[in-house]
Image (cartoon, rainbow, N blue to C red; front, side, top):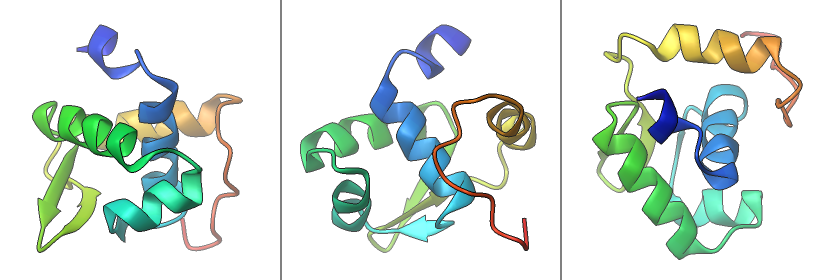
Length: 91
């Protein structure tokens, strides 16, 4: 699973965005914010949904809170230099 998870910079940006900026968003909004093409964002969202990390409900993408590794994964992002977004005070 790790090999599939960290194969794309776009995938990392999407996870960082959802962990630290917006816990629920639309594909186009995320694409614009991350300065990535909508097709690249859609492809990576589909991969993350398949991995069980994201879910899509009513055209909104969010973290899948039932994922067993979500908190551990967020901790990895917090502990590395890869975090592009400031952690909000309520986090």
